[in-house]
Length: 199
Image (cartoon, rainbow, N blue to C red; front, side, top):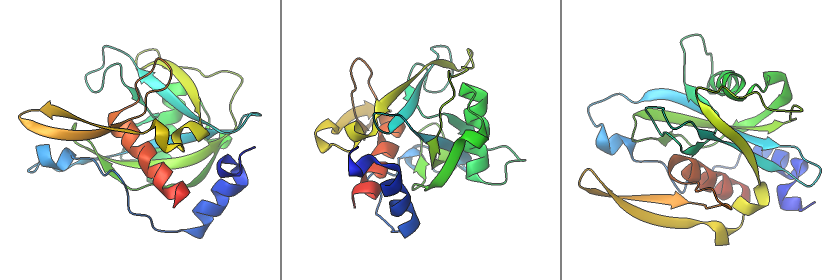
């Protein structure tokens, strides 16, 4: 296995606690300057596979109000009874794809990312022992799929693009994989994972 995508290497990186400047922090605060951003968390699930670690992603269903049809990490807004970002991420992961918290070893957190939809998202990185099958919440999740971690660690797969949104130019990252377009907040958090792991 590539040493830059092994479990022991990941644990060493997070145990070292090295502070790394994030590549992307999001721009939600620019569109909602008078609004308090709502706390949320996602799990960045690194799945143990015989061929090497993969990153588990989901595609949201097309009818959702926010980010319909887009590729994302499992996660969502914090609830009053969540005592940490990890608790939020693990609860939401179970609700969306049926992975129990006992199958996740939390390694640490990545820098907070603010979204244009008004969320202050904490990405929680965890090693996942996958179940035999994922149990998807049919209302929220259209599919779950995995991408080799090594794909995201290769700068050749990173794109930085622009678009016009409400009269402003927005910059965003994208990492197209096969027929799937991974972009926006998800790609931004993956860029921060890349920065942390390769610093």
